[in-house]
Length: 104
Image (cartoon, rainbow, N blue to C red; front, side, top):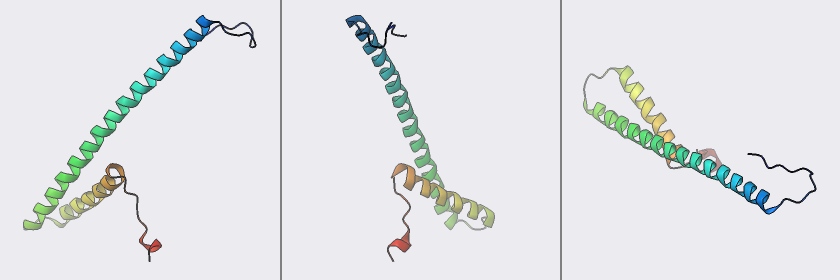
């Protein structure tokens, strides 16, 4: 949708202003809808991260009570738990990394 204006300095009439305002509102509404959809997707991804973190913590706690778990599995679970913990801190709780040396 374009607004025809013959001369750059020629004033627009009421119809042109109305058409321009309607076009701007349509554009704004489309952008708002896209942002809402993205926000919903972000919330869903955060729920998935929290669920995965909870499950890996349960597995990690169970492994402490099990005997003869292969060392490689223990290391993989601990690394995954650590990485998910960092992700939850940063992406869910918005906790930034703290450099301890700044406080010492």
